[in-house]
Length: 173
Image 1: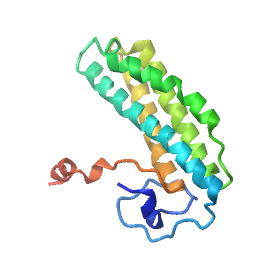
Image 2: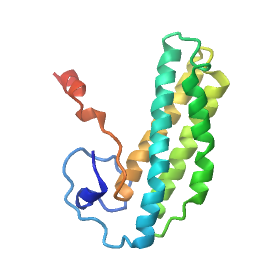
Image 3: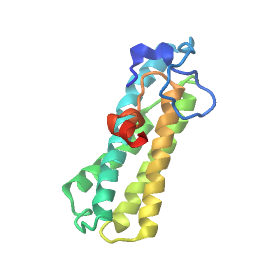
C-alpha cells in the first residue's frame, strides 16, 4: 500500500497507465502547492468511498450470481445506495487546481462508473439477468481502472493491488 509520505515513488501526472506493483523511480511532482495538497486531503474520502461502494457492490453481485435472490433486499444495498447518493455533492465540493485536474477527471469518471453500477443494480439485482450482470461488472471494472489511474495522477491515493496477495501468488504456481 502506498502512502502520501512515500510520494517520491509515485509517477508524475501524465499518461494513464495502470499502477505497477514495482518500485517507481520518478520523484514527486514539485508543483504540489498548498491548494493542491488541500485538494488531495479533501478528495481522499471521495476516493475511498468510491472504492468501498465498488467492493460492496461486487460482493452483492457475487451473491446474486450464486442465486441469492435477496441481494437487492440485503441491508448492505441500502448502505451502498446512501453512500452513492452523497458522491455527487462531495464531488461538487472539490475544487481541483490545475495540478489536480488530471486526477479530478479520473475521479469524476470513477464516480460516473460506480453510479452506473448502482443504477443497474437498483433496476435488476433481484433477478438473474446475464446482460445486467455484464453491464454491472463492466461499470465496476471501469470504476476500478479510473481509480488506478487516479492513483498515478497525484500522491496520497492508493488502490489495494490484490495481485500481490498470497492467494494470488498460489494461483501462479
